[in-house]
Image 1: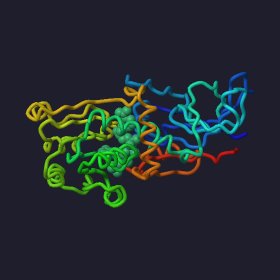
Image 2: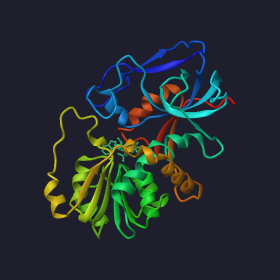
Image 3: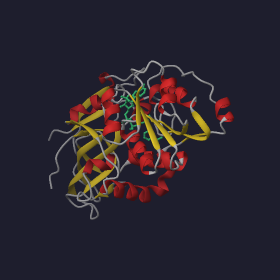
Image 4: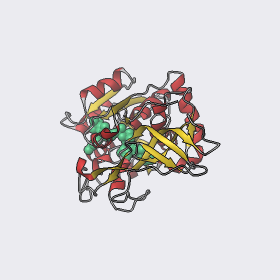
Amino acid sequence: MENKTILLGSRPHGTPTIENFEFTQTDLSPLQEEEVLLKALYVSVDPYMRGRMSDAKSYVAPYEVGKPIMGGVVAEVIDSKNEKLQKGTVVVGNLPWQQYIVHHGKGLNSIDPNMSPLSYHLGILGMPGLTAYFGLLHIGQPKEGETVVVSGAAGAVGTVVGQIAKLKGCRVVGIAGSDDKINFLKNDLGFDEGINYKTTSNIKEAVAAACPDGVDVYFDNVGGEISDAVIFSLNKFARIAICGQISFYNNTSPATGLRVEPILLKKSAMMKGFIVSDYAEEFGKAARELASWVKEGKLQYQETVKEGFDQIPEAFLGLFSGENTGKQLVKVAEREY
Ligand SMILES: NC(=O)c1ccc[n+]([C@@H]2O[C@H](COP(=O)([O-])OP(=O)(O)OC[C@H]3O[C@@H](n4cnc5c(N)ncnc54)[C@H](OP(=O)(O)O)[C@@H]3O)[C@@H](O)[C@H]2O)c1
């Protein structure tokens, strides 16, 4: 049976390239007691994986050169020696980029295929949705009538942040990298304003114009010059949730920029970084609330799906050139059962 695996072939210097990934064939051993055979259905590609491709110490261990890339995968149990994971069960877990996987059966979460499309568990009902939920509601603490700005607005996290902020009665301004994305945010997701940072000559003025009452909450997915510009429009007691800094992920030297401290001081503003796993104990409740908002049609969901296992590296690289709108996924196979 063909069973491709994608390994980290080499560590990138700067922007990753296709050469940093290596395809190999993996043989499958016969199942032992408690083990299951998984067939990958959907693979998630996420910006944080760029950090793991480097050997710098971070909140998750680096990938090892010559070892499989790991990440969020939705898979189907197609053979089983584990009573709790029968054939046909669909699971989500942290799994290798591999078509078929012999797995020990621990740490997999079963998902109900009748509740929502399977891919949602890697997006709006999975890690990115939870990230939006906790970063906005716990750190941003948006109140009715306030202005919320989100950067990386048209991506997996940003699209959910803006919509939850709308549910909370806020004015929402999204910053993203194309006119199509801005139109999507305004026309399909109900954002009040959008700024295309790639075509706007003065982003600081554009933010000020889009936020006539100032900025109460800034949800930062990108960092860098975009964030510097937003910070000049902060209101007194503003809250900044530092979720991601994708504009730096491919830097080869430390980024420099605005000194934010005097501004935060004068505005009595709060800036806080977070990792979604900080809120792990509350995941269940949040996932249920997200699911009910999706079911009630209060949250729209967008994904960009590439087809075929071989497309995984390209899909990942596309995150850094803004090819995705909403959650970027790769559909690897159909369900068997
Ligand atoms: N703290 C946490 O626990 C946590 C969890 C999940 C994600 N994150 C972070 O949240 C951010 C968004 O993640 P996501 O999964 O939702 O990804 P995403 O937004 O779906 O995809 C990445 C997007 O970033 C934008 N981008 C790429 N390079 C950029 C640059 N140099 N400057 C500005 N924008 C750039 C692109 O959109 P444009 O077309 O708009 O440029 C691209 O579509 C990432 O920084 C990620 O690391 C953090």
